[in-house]
Length: 300
Image 1 (cartoon, one colour):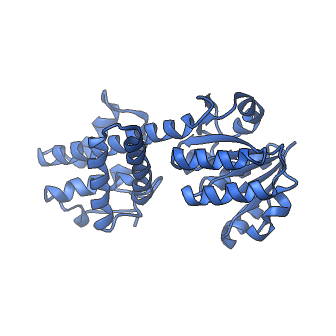
Image 2: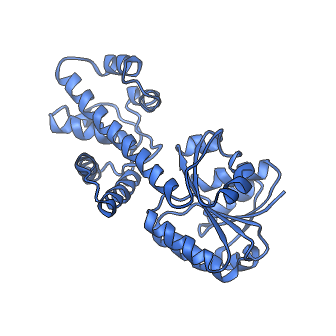
């Protein structure tokens, strides 16, 4: 049994912490939101507010974080450098830039803290059911030490290298997710304008040669025009900003990704920022006067 502190108890962080509790670990959760602490306590976690971070981290063997952005990661890294023991293993699961991740690892390393970068492929529902794909990078010995914990989150786990490879792989995967949604949006609009019904499109496309697991998953809700988010337009825009930044840093032109980002910006401008990123379909429909607003819609 490990003594673990989990920082960030949102849609991804709370399921991760919950699975560790169910596996028998002593888990303390920290979050700024009182509602998140209440939910965590209901799931069996001990909870403290951020003001108690230093005291609990000083006694932890492992610290895990699930944070919203680069700035939050840097802040936590400096906090850990001040109060964690040098033997502590820090596992960050946030979707952040490779540059911020490297900075955080350097800060922690200066205090003897070991850092494992863990990117999670999957949505919050997959996190709840422990079906995430785990992408890890950092020292191989740290990955091996952490694997019993990582196995609580999903059956497929990959160690990708000593540095920031996990962060980059997450961006690679999310680039393809965003492009799939954009491709689907244009196809659905083309089909409808060509006389195919919405229902028949969703009947055939998931069972066709392009019926990937992602498209099949979207086919569970979208035939009913249910845009309840598994991952919102706003969240995907954040990830595409990271992807485009990585492309600029690596001198990799990403013209198609830039176009997808603009389509998502249109979705946000049209009031769909809180819908599932598949709302790109609504952008494509509006562009050719299909006017989806006149049809049944869920997710708002």
